[in-house]
Length: 304
Ligand code: GLU
Image (cartoon, rainbow, N blue to C red; front, side):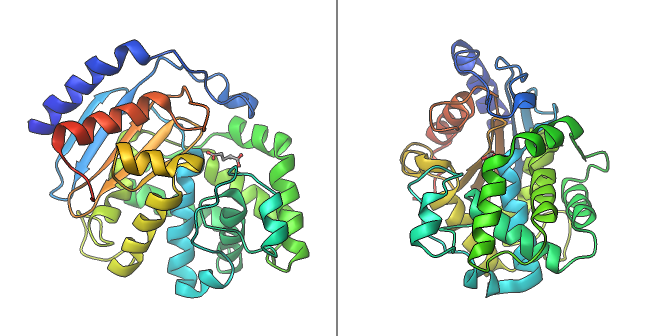
């Protein structure tokens, strides 16, 4: 009950912050999200579950899907992904084109769009039906057979994804995209348009706190070495150009998305997901960030 009390306190404390920041509006379908909504969920490696607020409300996971993308790419090609994507923080916008020019088409890391698009390309090369591979993976790991993607968000991204289309063309000019641009973009937008709740996400990613195994199953999703590597990338590159602030104030590997979700891992202990659609100027949920900071302050949990 310790963690439940903490979640209840956090919900009280963040109330004055709700509604202060607008949701993402560069994808029209995301602009409709309710910026007064808040949810938070905790899944421990012992299988305990705690939740507060709208923890069961599905939202657009957006860039949190880049963690699935990296997991699947590692499962398909192991360390070979490192030949096509780096592991350094970018220090530029998540959808920046300029960095690719002077780094010869090798994206800085898997969590900026260019890096995720390259890893999407590797998944397409290694599977007959990349949509189904992803959907099966998220349904199995979350234990929720009803997880789906949002057709409107997908279409909205497809219709307005000119910058992502430019990234794919640019990457192709360096030989770092092998499949058709349309296939890469559609698969990438499909990942971003998955709709999942805090409960779904915290449960699904619990392998990141448990050396690569779902607490409920004996078979590994990825190796413990791969798990450490994903967590390290989440710490250094998972929260856009605000990873330093997250390390300082939250102290856990995190991955955020412009749908307002933020995932956090306490290695060997638990996975936490907080969600509220209003975004700060760096593209991270203002309230979810604060909620995670309160959680680590109250529990003393940190990787440092
Ligand atoms: N679908 C988004 C895009 O590529 C991802 C945004 C995000 O959450 O970072 O623009």
